[in-house]
Image 1: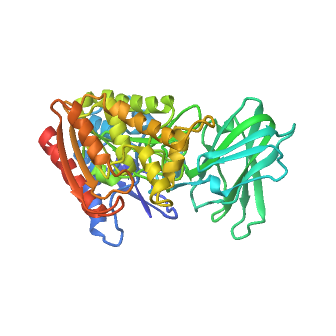
Image 2 (image 1 turned 90 degrees about the vertical axis):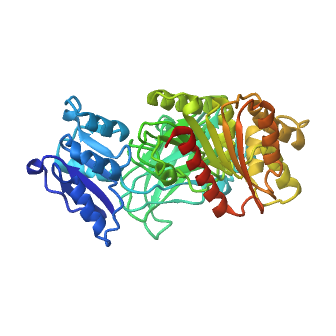
Image 3 (image 1 turned 30 degrees about the vertical axis):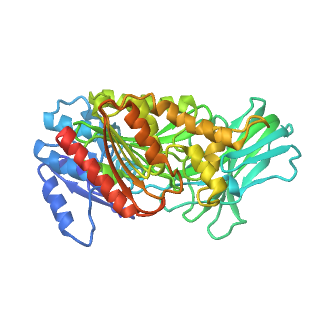
Length: 517
C-alpha cells in the first residue's frame, strides 16, 4: 500500500479518493505533524512516510519540519499557480531540499491519478540478456557472439523488415504499472530497424493480444508500452532490413514513472552515443558539506543501491549504478560516458556551492572501482571502500587460471573495455592494458588532502593484490594524505556483514571529524 498526502487550506481541499492499493490522507494548515504522529501510532498501517504529496497551497512554517522528515526529494507536487508566490525562508528551504515540481492540473481527479501513477513506492528493473537471444535460422549472414556484451550480425537483411532476433524470455506486467523498454544496439546507417513488442494474455503464451511497432526514432528514448493487462507478458523481437553490420545486446525494462525519474523519483540516465547507460541520483540532503557519492556494487537486478544508508547521513548524496553486462561494467565506458558522469558530479557540486574538498566517494566490491577510478579524477576529501578491486585485468586472469566460473563477468568486462582487435592480440596483453587504464589515472592523482579508508579481504580471490597495490601507489603520491585500513579473513565474498559495519562506522567518523556532522 502506498500512502499519499493532500495538503492545503482545509476548507478548500477536495475529498480524498478511494483508490485501490493507494491511500490518500488530507491535512490542513498546522495539521501535518499531528496527522503523521497518528499514522505512525497505528501499527497496522506500517507507515514510514509518504510516497508523494500534492500541495494545493504553500505550507505554513510550522508544518515544514514534518513534511521534510516524511517526504523524499522529488516527491512533492505543487500547483503551478503557486510558483511565483512569495515564500518564507522555511518554505524556500523545504522546496529546495525536496526539489518540488510545479504542475498544472485540469481537475482534482487528474491530480490524484497523476501523482499516484508516478510516485509509487519501490523500484523494479531488469534485462533480457544475450543468453536468451535467438537468431532467425533464415538469416544467412555472419553472427559473432561476445558474452553478455552482445551479438554482431553482418550481411544482407533484405529489402523488407522481418524478425531477425527474438528474445525467449518475456517481461511481466504488474498491476497498475507501465513498463518502459530500452534495447541495446549499435548499427551501420545502411541498416534500418524497428522493435516489435507482443503482449500475450495472462497464462496463455501463444495468444497474442496485440503487436506494436516502435521505430528507431521512438527508440531514441525509453519506449513506453501502455495499456497492458495485469499479468500479461511482453515479448520482443528486432526487425531489420538493409545491408551492413549491427551489434545487439540486452533489452532493459523497468517500471515507468512517466518522466519523473529513472527507477526512483529523481533518478536519471547518463547515456552515450553507443546507447550505453549509467544511472544517477542526486539528493540535496540538508545542503551542508560534504556531498557523498556511493557507487553500487555488482547487481543483476537493475536499480539504485544504498539509498537508505546514504539518506541516513542527512548530507547531500549521489548514487551511481551500472546496469550493463550481467551485473555491471565497473563504470568504465567510452570517453563520452565517463566525461558525462564527471560533468554531472561537478554540476551538483556547483549547485551546492561546494568544491572537490567537500566531496567523499565510496563503494563496495564493484563499487570500489568506481569510487577509486573517479576519485583519481576528482581528488575528493575522502574515499571509503570495502573489498577493493583495482586491477580488473587481473580479475579476468584469476577467472581464467584459478577459479573458472566464480566471476565470469570479468571476462565480459575485459572484452568490452579492451576488445580483441586482431589475431596478434593476446589475453595477457589485453588484461595488462585494462589494469593500466586504472593505474595510469590513479598514480597521477593528487591525494595530498585525501583520506583513504579501506577494508580488504586477506585472502581475496578476485584481485588478490589490490590492497597492497593501492597502499603502494597511495603512499608514493599522497604527500600528506591519510590511510585508515582494516583486514578481514576470508575470500572476496566472505565477511560481508562485519565489513559493511566497519564501512559505515568509518564513513560516520569521517563525516564527524572532518566536516563536524
